[in-house]
Every structure is written in C-alpha cells, then in structure tokens.
Length: 307
Length: 184
Image 1 (cartoon, rainbow over the protein chains, first blue to last red):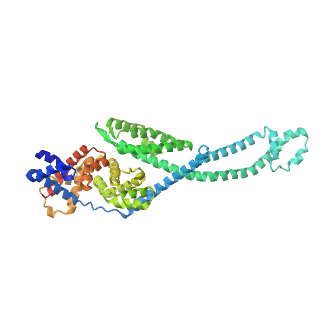
Image 2: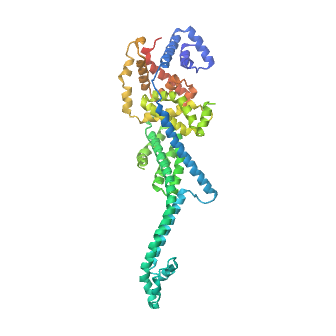
Image 3: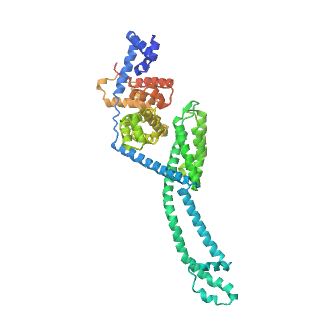
C-alpha cells in the first residue's frame, strides 16, 4: 500500500469504518511507514482530547416535569379528538348527515331563527288578518274580557277585535313569550354549552395548527437558496405532509361549522403546504426560491399570525 | 423488558412511565448533541425539551426497524437547525470573528500540563462553533457520539461520500485550532 492510499483510508480506519481488507493493509503499512504512523498518532491524540471534552451540562430536574406537562396536554387533546371522532362514527351509524355538536349547534340556531320568525309573522300579520287572530283564541288562555265584546253588533265585530284584541293578543304573547323563550333558551343552553366546549378544542387545534404552519413557512422563508445547489428539505417536507392532512380536516370542519374566517385562512395556507410536501428531499434551489418568494409576496405568514 | 422497542411500544399506548425512561436514557446524549450544535446552554435545554415533546408526538410514526437513538438524534438535529436558522447572521458573524478562536492557530505550543480542562473545553466549544452547520453535525455525531457513517447518513440525510468529506474537512479545521493542545 502506498502512503496516499493509506492516508485516504486512515480516518475510516480510526473510525472503525474501513472494510476489513483495507484495514489489514493500513495496519500493515503503519508498521513500516513513519510518516503515516505519525499521522495515525496525531489522529489518536486528537480523539483522546475530544473524549475528554466536558460540556458540564446537567439535565435540569424541571425538564421532565415540563415535558410531561406538555405531552399530557397534547395527549388530552388527541383523546378528546378521538372521542369526538367516535361520536361522529356512532352518529354515522344512524345514517344521518354528521350529527355532531356542530350540527346540533346549527339546528339550535335554526330553531331559534324559526321561533323568532313565527313570532315576527304573528305580530305583523294579526292587524291585517283578524280571522287568523281569531284562530288564536283557541289558545290555552282565552281572555275572559272577550265575552262582553261578543255582544257587540256583528258589524262592529269585524273591526273591534282589531282594536281590542291587539292589546290582549299582545298580552298573551307577553305571557307566552317568556315561557317560550325559556324553553328555547333551555334547549339552546344545553346544546351551546357543550358545543362551546367542543369549539374551544377545535379553535385550540386550529390555533396550534396555524402556529406550526407559521413556523414551517418561516423555516422555508429562512432557507438560504442563493446558490444553485440542492437543498435538503426532508424535514420541511415531512412536516408539511403532516400539516397538510390536518389542514384538510380542519378546513372542512371550519366550513361545516360556518367558521368562514378560519376556513379562509386554512384555504390560503393549503397550496403552500401542498407545494412544500411535493418537493423532493433534495430540492432544487429555484423551486425552494419560488416558494419562498410566494410566501413573501402573499404575506401568508402575516395572515396566519393575524388570525 | 425495558428494551428500546418495548419502551416505545408502551409509550405509544400512552404509558407515561415508559416515555420517562426513554427520556432518562437519551436526554444526556441529546442535550450534548444539541449543545454542540447551538453552543448555548439554556437554548440547548429548551431545544432538548422540544425534541422530546416532538418525539412523543411522533412515536407512533417511528418505523420498527429504525433505531430509537438515531431517530431522536434526527429530531434533535432538526430542532437545532430550526433554531440556528432563526438566529441573525450578525450573531453568527460575531461567533466566527471570536478572537479567541482566530488567535489559537497563532499560539505557540501550549504546555498541556498547565492547561485547565475548562480552557480546553472552551477551545473545543469555540472551534466547533466556527465549523459550518453540516460539518459540525457530522463531526459531533461521529466524534462525540460514535455514530456509524450509516447512522449519520440516516440522521442527516447526507450521502456517505458527502459526510466523509465533511468529516475530513471538519477534522482538518478542528486540528488547526486545537493543534497547539495536542501532545503526540
């Protein structure tokens, strides 16, 4: 073996990475060659110095506590999500379209809207259609004051109720309204309370998702792509794939729940995630540069931050 | 009973104690590795914490054949790299212009016996800081953590020829700086 061959292999030899045959030849050469043996000794001495390198690092006792707390929070959120997933699956068994809390919430809003609409219509239709008001007299509490009115001449009967029944009608409405309001509010309260809790989890998930996406985009934006060399984006790519899956689910949920600002921001984010996820592990610099420029031009990071 | 695979399986099922054992087993090499990359103690602690949180999040994605330590080093490298990227160039320039580092090669042979360990540790730390990111990662994994070339390739995503070249160049640069302290 020649010296240059030996010197080419000597680091692998020290690292224990040289193939067996090469290692034997290097070993034999070192016995006979003083210069190469000196290089070997130098490398060995350096290794010894590095072996003595003491960073004087201690693992703070609080570190595990912090990690445990953080992982417990995340585990809880995942559990909650899987529980709601199970609920949705059960709802699916009954072949109804998505009977989740969001759906219940929407239904509650619908019920309130219908109730308000009915009240509004009743208030506004009564003066114009007294016979409809008359049908309302079959209400559980017909006003006793109407009895004397019935003795009035029939010609007046058509006009009088217009004047006299209105306040009475108004009164019955006033009596009935709180009861109705109460029942609606009761239903609504139950639904909205759990719905709010669910939404809170959803909102937290969205916020956390957007924060991670923001970090990813910042990471992409900070990549040095001035040279035309390939850039290792393995991490960004895998992170982007993960976030993309989340993004699709969150965007759909936001759409279903009528959260249009969230849906909009998630929708703006998605093309970036798709582009990053589709980069090769060693991405060509121009491709990365293009994404960086789009990130800067569209100010998506600011949009995410603003949300 | 407490093999890495066993601990991972138990941690995946939500057993906090199993994950704590993983933390105890690997926290020291991970914090050392991160510290070598970022050169800041407090930051290294924060990034170690982040590494384990991310590891917990991704445990289920750990391929069976993947080695836990290699996987953790990979996460740590990414976490450290993200942090390094967010540093300003100015800070990096200050680090590279550190007079102590530049002056080392001009010193005459120092009497090793009189050197305090702390000083030598400081020299190694500053010399590591002066390496570029790729060389520092490869050098640290090989020299301080005795990872094989294959493991380094898996952690960094570099090809074996690239990491061999980086390692060789890193050794030369490190030698230039710690040379005065080496006694042959």
